[in-house]
Amino acid sequence: MHTLEDIESTLLSLKNTFATGKTKAYQWRIEQLNGLMRLCEVHEKDICEALSLDLRKCYTEAYLQEVGYVKADIKHTQKKLKKWMKPRRVSTPLLAFPAKSFHQPEPLGVVFIMGAWNFPFQLVLAPLVAAIGAGNCAVMKPSELTPHTSKLIAKLVPQYLDSDAFAVVEGGKEVSTDLLKQRFDHIFYTGGEVVGKIVMKAASQYLTPVTLELGGKSPCIVDKECNLLVAARRIVWGKWSNAGQICIAPDYLLVHEDIKNEFVDTLKQVLLEQFGDDPSQSKDYGRIINDAHFKRLLAYIETSQCDVIGGKHDTDSRFIEPTLLVEPKNSALVMQEEIFGPILPVISFSDHQDALDKINQGEKPLALYLFTGNDDVQQRYLLNTSSGNVCINDTMIFMSNSNLAFGGVGNSGMGRYHGQSGFDLLSNVKAVMIRPFILDVFIRYAPFNKFKLTLLKFLQ
Image (cartoon, rainbow, N blue to C red; front, side, top):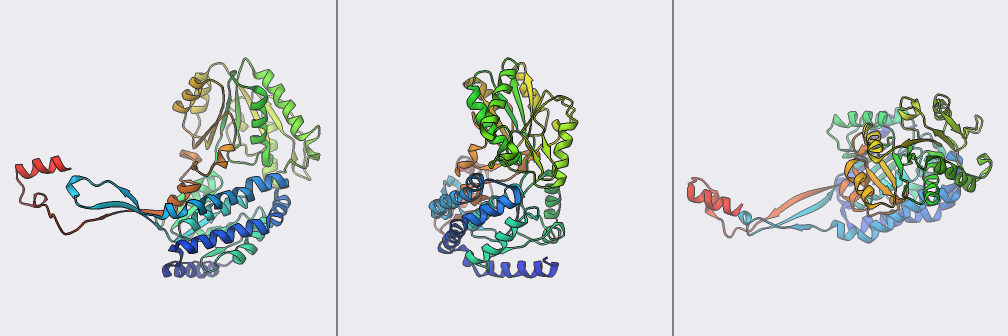
């Protein structure tokens, strides 16, 4: 357990390191990224085993969504970093001629990264890739709800990264509270809305900028003009990976009334294909993180007052089978809160305006999914909804593209990262203009007259 004095001492050490300027060098950044890559490669099995112990993630999910994901981020950053670090020229108005104008990225300083338990490796290390690329030092706080992964990160980071620039602090709520009392140059938090507000309030004391990657009720619309079997496979993959404990998982389905019954049958068929007759015996199906979340999810099922398909559970292992809730009332608890578990409400809609009204009456979600083969329908949803991310005819796969920025809007979060977006997020992209002493145009100086004003209007 870290004390407040330990935290203050660690932060002072990192600030002193940053003040030396060593983190600004391109070669230093590349060396740290290389070290992080070696960490992922050498300890792939250790990381996947820790994820299995914490969440019972299968090896394939653990690799693709955590280890492999971080490795892809590292590769992309290594490839593009030199270009991102260069000054970015922009044009200069006649009024300031002759001059050159550009944007110069510079590191912020010391970044605080607060990880989340549902992807306890990825959501610490992926923001770290952006922090390293931008030339920052960083303090990482893994989730205490995934102790095996947290302990492994704390053990490995000092072995592969510069200990003068990076620190891992383990602990629970008290440690997080002490960390939030410190003055960082940026705070990066992934988690829920309640803690997100606490983070933002703490950051306001020093006017520290924050990135909040939160969540919300991400809708998934299934139009009658689509391949129902492919749609079902992609929805089942996106919803029941990690037992539904994913912030961008489809939170509820809006299915056209003409195909609702057929689509529910198709979902049942695909669930059988992917997880078998008894999902509790599937090596590819995870478990709920703790008792509190297990009880919360059971309450959604018990209070749904609708047709329940599935719902079997085991308290000792915190297993809840893939569950469909058919036509729950809008007032039901499951429709008022982010589910974050293996439960999927299915609601019919009569026309697209009906579906749009249902979506827009709630808070802006982190992701929106639409399955349709109609281009006009695609454009209608793109233009008439607001969400952090949109994926058409698939779920979650957009996260595999490092060129796409990821982030929320409104209650689903603020700030975007991945690729250059992450580099820019954790940089100060400062504006610079350099002028020579020649051609010192007199018209901008007092005393003014109509002739000077006319020329200034023309040149501006």
